[in-house]
Length: 359
Image (cartoon, rainbow, N blue to C red; front, side, top):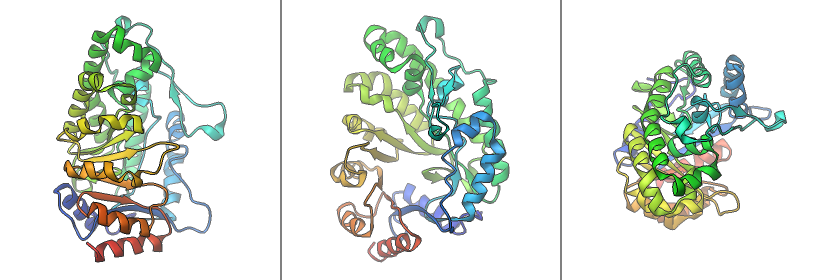
């Protein structure tokens, strides 16, 4: 198996397979892409939500082609591109409408308008397979898979599933009150979302022709089902409510994947780290300190806690250069570490050479 956008695909896949087995292949993983074109870099992520929702699939695929002409994928980073329609796309799959800001310059994100006034009128939650947004994502994935064949991968979609979806459907303020005032409705809604989540993932996995020898990618890569799982809403909850309502859903979602990375968003959510480290099927932790906080690579004690629990860590953030990596390499060691530096091609290659020579 090979990809034209990743000539060393076989070597990178070998490194990933060693990583999942708790082994080190030559050095810690390094994930980086570098712009090598003469003009400004083309970022296919910029308008993916807008192109998806407006049906401009071919225009977006053309943008990816232009991006590939001037981009090199280094280390273990795989060329994989999104068919996402928005952070709250799961809510849209269930009937919500996605809205963009008025300014076209701000269409990198969107949001869902809440539609649940009373849970009794909305439960049980069912996925309509003919939902327009869901079908649009599937159509986008099929078209991308056809264009991508032998060149790059269709990336697994963002999974703001279960509680994040319910928060978008209900509105975060009212959903928070529901935990106190109507906990039985929250449990019923969470149970429905736990059934729906795998159905959504599997349909897009199939549409995007993922898996097999070319694998599946969303930051991480593996030959089977993989991707990022998350629940940003947990920043609103204390340990008791998290363990009762959310943790079982996270455990099931992680078990559904062959390999996964958990996106832990915000220092306020770090209170749940020990509970997450106890989830057997979570493989990697991505600490996201958020705006105004020191970058993720400076949270060394947290990174060490993850590694001590047998989890991998994504090490990234502003200032992650060779000198910083030299310090971190002594602190963290090579096993389970995934570095995501940015810079010029020669800088990334120097980082990889140093890590190989010192592992």
